[in-house]
Image (tube, rainbow over all chains, first blue to last red; front, top):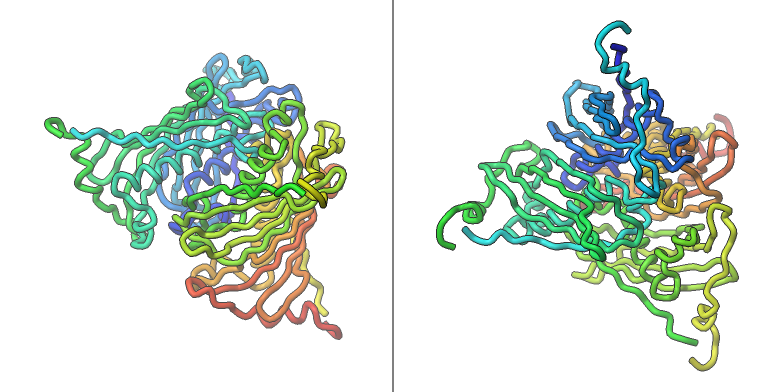
Length: 139
Length: 139
Length: 139
Length: 139
């Protein structure tokens, strides 16, 4: 089983990420997670720019997101994302978002994605080598 | 048990709701759902403008959202939202998003919320009368 | 000269439109304006859905926007937009955003657009009948 | 006259920055510019986090933005921002956004801001030392 890469991205909370309750708006985290997931994909064989040229896309099928603690304007945060589970044509990624200053966990999330070829919406096979991430045995 | 109100809101898909894959971006639906939920709250006793004056907010604790079918630029869609479950200080709302022209279901979602008083983050009791929505017996 | 139609759209300010300064975020108004402009276009011969099928788009070339007074959570606002000026291949729209309760002007804006055929980016002629909006003489 | 600092920030274009026309949506650039401007402010004496604790904010009074050339999914872009002009209580920042790969200019923009103390909306004096940026003579 090969080590599954964990992608770290960082953000600094801007005004446009916050709302009148004085905290990071719940929707803003989904942007942070998308950026992390996109870079994660590029690292493990899904180059979104190249795929997009072939009208193949990683489509979010389901999102689950838990808001554990509020983030605030100016917070520096780190998003960690990794591949958590694969089937033939779908896969799950998992994410956690922590504030850097106190390592407080703000958000946990998992997203199921499918590779689809547009405009038909036809499912596309996941990269073969992903199985190695989940196979027992030698590296 | 009183009838639980179902709130319907409508949207027309704008360019800013779509992405380069030619479909409605997954995050955009969360805005549609927030608007529906905010109006739903107002209808059943949570006036967000008044609450906000007392620094009390309905905080999203968890979102689950399933993307069933893609929406497209110019689609007229209807969002339906209702109160699905309550506990002492938290509640679940459920939502479905359908395209109006063919009644195709695009999205199903549920969100758990808590009422909190900021800046302390202290939980606030749900409106008493909500229990009537879930009690057996006469109306 | 035919009467130039003025399109009115309304919005209710949601949390996602506001920021931690407690006011409507400056970027949110651009969404309100885009929706108004899109509907304005449809009314005067530019059906964005149909155009998009031909890969023809109204591309914003320049935006000028003045923030006159802050909007707040829960405000009901009205956006008014109209065609202000045309040339061969470009046109200006103008917008004003007022709070409904006190008719306070929050924002004034103008945008220059061009019709372009993608992916070449080739300019497309404006609808001929638009000249009637700006011609002197009988209706 | 002291050298005016030029702040450079970079972005990679994500799906949520694009629209169904296949290009970066015009509104997305305003987020890129806000991040650049916020960091610029921090560098020259306006710490937005600290100011926000005193309910003092840099409010955008006017935005002018010219869209020169389209950006695309996956583009790496650089935003450059600097202080361009000051008066007693207002100031202008200027920005340019270029694609890194071919140094193509995508956007030019200028924004006028005012420092205001909320909730009164009272104007606040700009940092004294900013005058040095615009004074002739020795450094």
